[in-house]
Image (cartoon, rainbow, N blue to C red; front, top):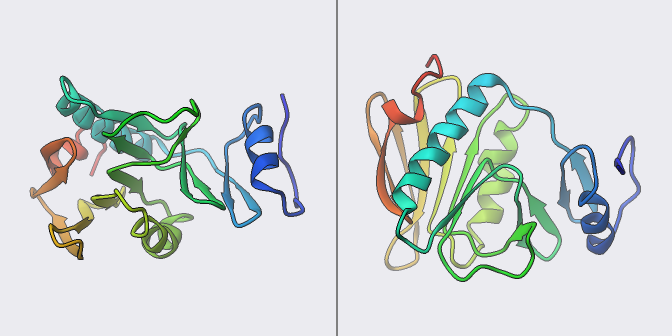
Length: 186
């Protein structure tokens, strides 16, 4: 298997996609720069699994697909990320490794990714035309930042904590924080 390692010269999107198909480590692609992704903590994994499971259950019988962190998101021509959880409800694209039209994106924060999740990805994700909600989930405390596009197309924000509930538009479901953090020690 190929591996992208060390300091890498800038690469084209085509080269990134070709190399990434057989890479031992996942990488995100940002404007020609390639960034290796570190492994996740057990808590991070548990929270992502809880969210993915709840969204997948709510998707049954609907045209929605739920993906975990191994499916790439093409957020722009020169931006590829691996969201922790992603939901797409429109027609499925031709590329089996890339989703281009998500309606919900979820990132679980970690000390090394929190700033990117809250700034860079927030700005990028809000530009995705069909995206209806972006959840930033804190893995260390019971807090979810919910960013969503209202019926007029205006982005809104709320913070949900404690024993609250988070509205998800596709599939339409309310996620309880008790469900999100179940068996995660938070």
